Length: 273
Image (cartoon, rainbow, N blue to C red):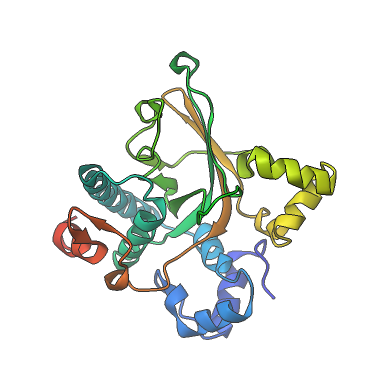
């Protein structure tokens, strides 16, 4: 069994041994990959691991950066024009599929975001927790696509109440981040944490194990990252990998200004960037 800590060559050989063609983005659609994903818990993490560990030449990185920047601007402008809030899941899976079609390596990452606003804003720290009470699929979702470590088109377009959006960029395209320690307060809401600490007596390792025993291995590769933009501090804490199980033409969860994901791609992006 391959481990997330194994090197790229071993991972690629492992996938090839199962007759998975790893030559282009989106190979999680390979039927052999899907079969393994159905049998092995968290197998999708190997796709993200492949992208993180793969070596990219400078030409690829430069061309990808230019394309990603243009696609991000197009999608962000459509999102703002439409006015939809809280579209992180739907927009991220659409963008990921678009990047696949443009032959750009990427994966959507679900997790938590913590935002610490400048002192002069008088706005309290904002948390998008992955583990909380209520009916939701993820705290937040963003894209990882070299050379960018974090691509986030929706964090500004949330249902804020204190003017938080004025201190958050319309688009986050972050190439430089700093790895930081896992802080459970960024991942788990205080209400849930209070229950878990009673059960596990404030033992963080046991709390993490109770949530999901596989997280111990997950965090060996997928680390929390922090950075500052215009005096606003961000911490992105991964919690899982999430991709669409249908092609772009079949994604119906996102419609912006009367256009589906595939229509946005065909009309605004394909052959135009």
